[in-house]
Image 1: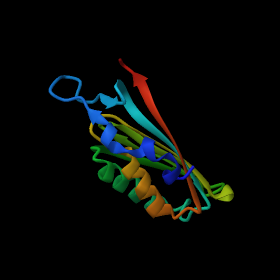
Image 2: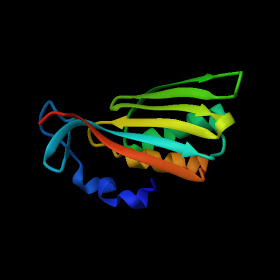
Image 3: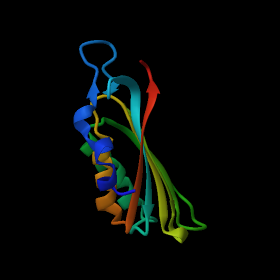
Length: 145
């Protein structure tokens, strides 16, 4: 699904991190309170899906663009098909990627809490991999109240 098809879901103005308490990591959306926002991103017919340097850069830039604090990036290259699996561990959760270059596909999870904007990380993915299609499923996780 293209970003334009889900305009109400991508309006970051509705999401506000709870502040002024020990719960600054919680996210408010449409009158409810959540642990975080989780984007499931499917990258189809993209470039550089077996390039660990491009993938590392995309994870790092995605975290920065979203306003998250990067703690660690770890990548693993699979020699049999050129695929790469990796994770950027964030203070606000994670961005993970698994690529299947032989299918020209990558699955990416962007899960963040607090005052971050995971859509900005998805924008970085679009820029880095230049996919013919980028599908995004948007979920609010861990309804607290």
